[in-house]
Structures are given as C-alpha cells and as structure tokens.
Image 1 (spheres, rainbow, N blue to C red):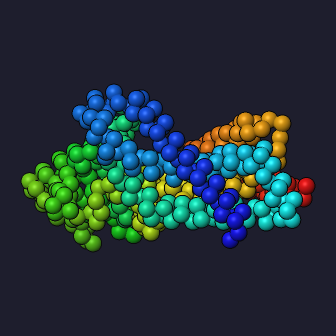
Image 2 (image 1 turned 180 degrees about the vertical axis):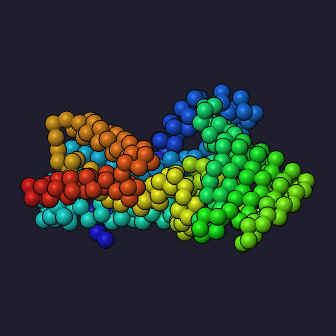
Image 3 (image 1 turned 135 degrees about the horizontal axis):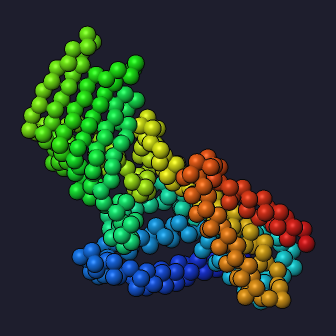
Length: 364
C-alpha cells in the first residue's frame, strides 16, 4: 500500500467518522426533544432512555444509514481534493484513474464487510435492547399495535390453529381461547377452549384456566373433560407464536431463517416483514460499494459549483436512495413485488449508473 493509498483511506475513514459523530449528536438531541413527552408520560425518565435505549438505537440508525453516510463523506472529501487539484497532481504523476480509485475500493470493501457481519450477527443484539423500550417512544396508535390488545387467529402447524379473542402482547395474556387440531383430511381431532390463557416465564409454558377439552376418536366418539387450570405447551414462546413487526430485527440470520420457515408453515400473512429484513441485511452493505463508486465519479473533477454543488447533488441522490428503500418496503409488504426484488431494486438501478459514470470519468 503506497503513501497515496494510505492518504486517501485516512481521509475516507476520517471524514466518515466525523459524519457519524455529527449525525449521532444532532439526531439524538432532536429525537430526545421530540419524544421526551411520550417517554415521561409512560413513567420513564429521559436519563433512563439515554442509557438504556439511545446507545442501541444509534447503532441501529448508523448501520441502517451507513451507505448514505459513506456516499456523502466520499462526495465531501473527494470534492475538496479535486478543488485543491490534488487529484490532477496524482493522475499527472502517471497514475491512472483506476489506480487512483483503488483505495476507495479497499476502504468501501472493508466497511461493507464490517456492515455485512454486523447486519447478520451483531445488530440483532442491539435491536433486542432497543425494542424493549422503543414502543414507549411511539404515538398511541403505534404503541397499541406492539403492546396493546389484539385479536389472534394464527396457524401453529399445518394441522393446528389457535384463536384468542383479546390478547395483550405486553402482559402475554388473553381471553376466550380456542385451540383446534385436525387430521390430514381436515377432520377435527382435538379442541380446547378456555376462558383465559397466559404465559408463565418460569415454566416456559402457557397456562389456561376454565377450560373444556374435546377428543374425537376415529370412530367419531367424543371424550369431554374440563378443569380449572392446565399447562399448555405450544412449542414456542408467545413472541414467536404471535410475532409483531419488530421481531425479525432481533434475530440473527440463522434464527431469522428458522423463524421464516416457521411462519411459512403457519401461513403468516405478514411474512414479507421478515423477508424484507433478511434481504436488506445483504443489499445495504453492497450499496456501500456502489455509492462509493458513484460518489467518486461525481466528485473527482473540479466543477464550477465546487463542494457545495457536489454536496447538493449527493444529498439529493441520497434522499432518492433512502426514499426508494422505504417505498419498496411498503410495496413488498403489500405483496406488489417479491421481497428479494424489492430490496435489491435500488442497487440494480444505482449499480449500472455508478459503473457507467465511473468508466466515463476514467476515460476522460
């Protein structure tokens, strides 16, 4: 690695580090000011959230927007190099544009590899801590979806179903439960109805109260039994049996793949939430390399608008990139596009554009 390589990589990582620090301070200050009334109305203090929520939330935010931060950082320091005629001097010394671009590829590749590893294995840990408190920063309607009462009607396996009239996710307790099991010909074999069902953490099982149980034999005869209390093993904890939209964020990729397989067997209609999370974990790190190439191509020539003009273009493109991911998430969740295609469309669009501009700049 030459002196020029070390110089560019140092500028790349130094500018990115400054952007990360600046983003962290600004975003946390703004977010605390806007959400402190909700936090305090739920019985917490802002100081508690600064210790137990915001460090993990910032990890999530930084990793989520890493590609955009990389893009703006590269635009910024490369534009400064171009305005100071440093790039002209490097290329005039006999180095080709491809040779000049090598440290950009090295730095972006290392960051992409770090981001890829973090997305698949480390970020879920931060999300687990973040999600314990995130609902208390939301508005009433959004908080109710995660912590409030809901009606459960889900498939536990290809032949078993559970229905709960009024289930509270926070308390892990519901009323008016019916569990049904069928044979392969869709004939009812077993049914349990209960007044109440709740999760017991120590036993790692559900408990039902006021239950009536029916067993139907092959000859069609029914056997009835009832009781006040009974343990019920459904094979998984309630957060996995009745998942919310945030559950996928807390699973490492092997765990997420197992969850997706489980939800497919259950026939979960919200499966695309988890598939989007899975495919996004790989597509976002790849976008770091693509956006680095795009930023280098756009900012490596001295222009009349200077750094300001390049930054304006960069921020506009960054907005389009972020908006496209968020819009495509919604499109995928509504089953308009397959999740794999939806989460890779921005890279499929920006990738060829970056390659075209790169080779055009290299041939000038």
